[in-house]
Image 1 (spheres, rainbow, N blue to C red):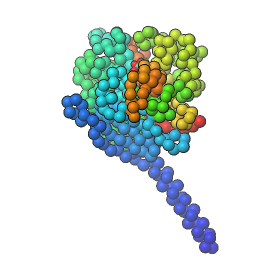
Image 2: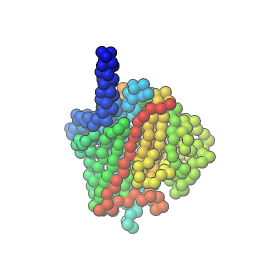
Image 3: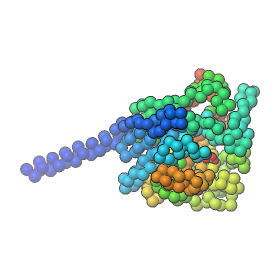
Image 4: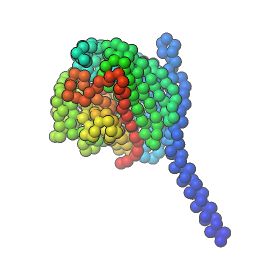
Length: 376
Ligand code: GLA
């Protein structure tokens, strides 16, 4: 009898423990705020730390950037899987990487730094040869956003004035970063007071083995896209939606980034590797899988979901070993990859691409989720 009641007690204890563990993994993310650094004029840049279970994300108000993302591997060991810097100065002096930033108003390229809307021509700064990249010389990645804590995360707001970087309309952009159920969710919304164009995305560079651990060529990538937008030498879409079938751009089955990256293929030469927009097979506007990536040694798996029609798969070809990132790590060529969920590049000049126009009274709304698990 005594041994039976002991047995029951042990069983009860185990049940209680299991309940606590499962409740613990669904607890609301803890959010804390502190100061990350100071801008040259003395303005403070805040940093918000979001913690949920074993996941930890840190976001700063300069460029609304994700500056670290700690994720467990298959044995539960966490590592920071996004490239970046230890200090604000790294971000403010980096000329062209956009590490972790929200890029806008127009993520990706606008050809010849110009577009027409409602019959009027708008000229933008050319900051990528003759083209505009990621919203111009002083894009959203270089702005100080206003932030406050929300349940599970942080909300950041930026008001971009009429004519900012040449774009029409005063635009109010809101970005919510939240940690929920082993995922980092980024929710974008925006309104305008004049017709304008808009394409917001996040420009995080991932190395699922841990930032600074070498190249990302061993990562297995799957992108559910039958077509992509081929580019010219300025990385501007040619207008065509070309099939990926039979090309090294086909990632419909999980394939190592490095398996075909140096193949004799015109598009890979123009992109210096992968730097292409994939046309997602699913319906835009509905949260759908945009990519799945496995890093075989750590077992970390990243699943990207989005409401956007496209994703730019960029294999970090322009990293060149001159940037010294976190812990002094040298970021060599292809030491990080980006999956920038987005509308197609140069859409304002391509009437047949899904529209990037936003009118007064409408609300721009998109969601991207970076979900983490482990596998082999
Ligand atoms: C984007 C572009 C790349 C490169 C990076 C920033 O992803 O598509 O060509 O400019 O930004 O270096």
